Length: 334
Ligand code: ACO
Image 1 (cartoon, rainbow, N blue to C red):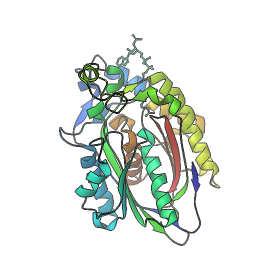
Image 2 (cartoon, rainbow, N blue to C red):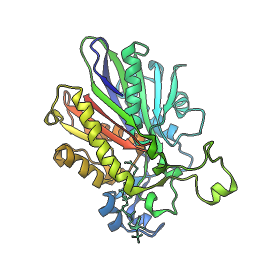
Image 3 (cartoon, rainbow, N blue to C red):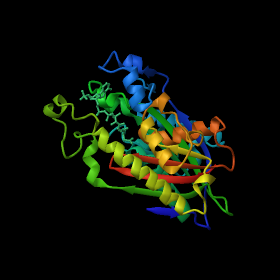
Image 4 (cartoon, rainbow, N blue to C red):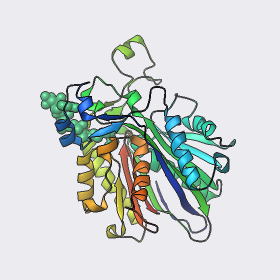
């Protein structure tokens, strides 16, 4: 699906925010839980540490904190939004949606609230959904949240996955803007379900409801075929960027900052090399947080703005890839 700026109603990014739990789990500490080492994790992934949510802290808690920061920065409160979308693959419950819990926690009015499930591409999917509502005139101000507590769905006995993931949340306030202002220059999203089983949680859904057997076999945790994910991720992230950029009048050199999904330093390196971006124009925070799925690109964008890596009027490209497989890219002007 592709969307390009529509002249009548623009989509303005009003503010962003992020929330990362305080608890840090270092590679050193992880090597006391499973047979691994700081050296193995660092050379294969670039990750040095990740954040872990407190016992009982849910995606809606982290998401609500990030949302409150974004709303405060915009001079708004929960009561001022007219739609709430949450991207997550670690919902509080299968239903109701995590968005409904966030709605309650930020004191939003009785506005539509729903989740988007597109794994690590979730935030870009949510941006596409929100912009569609805004451009059609159906919503004026939308809050989108990417929130994950992946630590609660991670098999802490499986060294091939538990070193990769972390917890966190980010949020963005979008508004309808008349008269030419448009922060979302283009957006491209795609998916291919033939890869569904390469990165998934096998049990807990209708295909394998919880039984003693599924629990014993640890099927309620994430499973991943790392090598296959790696190959498709690099190709599809590069392709998503190119397709999104082609909908604008811009050249790659006009992009001030590439913000790729932060799963793994080797994927980031390969994507930025393929697209011809030097590392100084590529944002990296995977060493601090690991992979926080749907929260990754919005947390990175919020940090890049705070650090002055992006300034008013700059153009950035958010690019993501995740379970499904899903992928997407958004070219934004901040
Ligand atoms: N510590 C030490 N050894 C380990 C660890 C660990 N944490 N994990 C695996 N190993 C061992 C394996 O058992 C294997 O040992 P063996 O050769 O004796 O059998 C060896 O290391 C090599 O294992 P591989 O799985 O072949 O390692 P690989 O080089 O493929 O690296 C990795 C694994 C880092 C997961 C890589 O495949 C990768 O980066 N994949 C991308 C996956 C990803 O980032 N997914 C995130 C979700 S999707 C997304 O967000 C893009």
